[in-house]
Image (cartoon, rainbow, N blue to C red; front, side, top):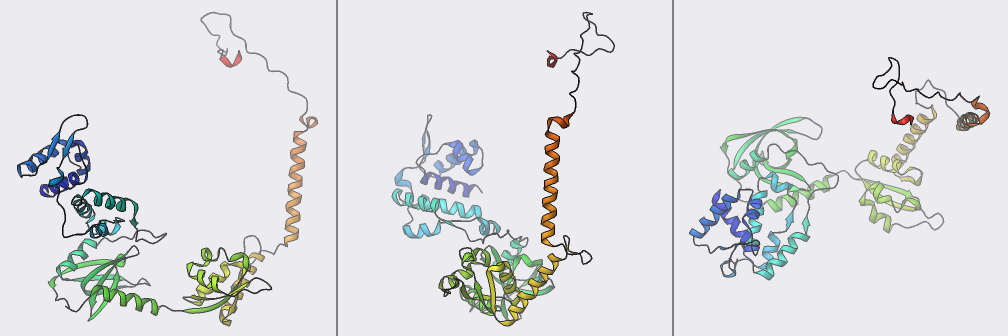
Length: 393
């Protein structure tokens, strides 16, 4: 809208000392002629825009005409203009509006405070996405946002963790963005629940509105939800011995959660090994973590974990001992005979190359190649003659 564009132009002129019409057109993605018309509209509305001609000319605002947000302190503005990653704002359709709001806030600050706020905006970035996580698809974000803001009930089909689709009739209360993932907080059968929006395969906004519970508080609910989720996860305690050579790379192999136990664990003075008490989600996860460490780790407790690791290790050894490709029909090949066979093949190949490179094995030299003759007839070529080329000279 033109009114919004006029406000954005005033914000840019409040921040910058002087801006040319082409630069304003580039920033607002409009034509230069549109900028001239907008400047005329601002002047007619009483905004004292100063126009300067010349190579370094442009438009500017007098310092006395720049609005100062007296109801906001410098710290308030700095907190509002901190640079965030664009993902949550873009999915809500508010990325451009947020950028314009930051420009308006910066334009209302005095010059010393504005310079500090610009440095903070350029040098501090808040990235809420997790590592190595692909951006999830949220095709129903616009419908969910409208339903949350208008208090409209929805009917959804939700794909649960194991892949079973389930139908729900929900009363959407809020949207939460955590670690790169969007969640829908909704009431279902008298209870508030959180649904991962990327697992929604169908969303239909119903015609009826619902009455929100006045006692619902989103921060309190989300804090309680995260606490219940973390405490409700399955816990499997295991005791593992780790060789000293693996300790520096142990967090990279087994996760950051083992850094503190590895640092605080006691060291065996005789061998240098450390005995760690680690927490996993299940016995299968613990066995996989121990096997990933190879011969530099040993499961001590509980006995079931030790038996599981031994059984999987025996299965791996039996598979590799069965032969090159692993089928049961192949006979095992002893490592010593395999090594001797490889040495014999390498030696025979070396002898073959040496014999091929010796002068005696090359045989008599080939006769010299005859020079091609050039026909003496000027301007004509013999029927079977070869035209001269520069490579023959």
